[in-house]
Amino acid sequence: MSRPTTGAGRALRGLGALLALAAAWPAQARAGPPAEGEPARPLLAGLAEVGTTPHLRAIAGLGRPFERWVGVLADGWVNDSMTSATLGARFELQAVNLDLHWRATRRFTPAVLPPLAHHTALPSGPGQTVRALDVDLWGGLPAPGGYLLWEGQATRLLDLPASVHVFDEGVHGIVRPPWSGLASLGWVADLRGGDLQVGGTVELAFLGRGAARRVRAGPLLSWRLSTHLDLRGQLLWPVDGPDRLPLWPSLGGGLALGWRDATGWPPLR
Image (cartoon, rainbow, N blue to C red):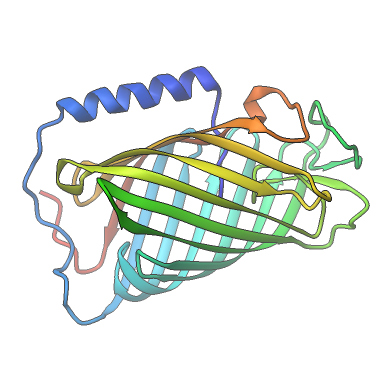
């Protein structure tokens, strides 16, 4: 699911700073998760991220946490425009992964808009809550120099008529209920023994508004600092679409510093 960022300048400067820091950061040997080939085991895991959209995740399941597992998960996000919570299930194999979840998003301004052919602004006023069901299929495949990343997502908005438009976090854009979705394709270079991945992605959003589509593209970065700590950055810039919103709500991605832990992992050193 796409996440909003907080302004083009800060996001670009942040990605540039991460790249420069990654180039200078010394590679380190460290203990990792349980070795490949171990039998699947029950697990509890958690993730906390700070950045443009702070995020918490709790996991219970069977397998190797954050790598190959099946189970249930709960997530929460918050930023200056919304709070969002999801509850669902995940089947994760790295090459192919599947999320099924229920989502409730509280926007701090109205989410429902009139059904215009082209929107140029988001309304002000009291906040609204949008509920949805999301299905997300994604993965990564080996490619020359790195990995090919792919994703397909479908969202069904609940309890909203097709006679309105809605700003929904499923595609982080203005859609017509009930169905919307996106497809994306990207590539990352695999660097520093797999600890650093840098590349880009292109995203096509289906807005449920007849033939209207939206295209965004931009760089992405993932940098694993240790077993427990990583940095992620992405900036999705609007390229084409039916709406001409201000830049701030048009962007996707963000910057996040994440801490993760799981039962059976080695203690922090």
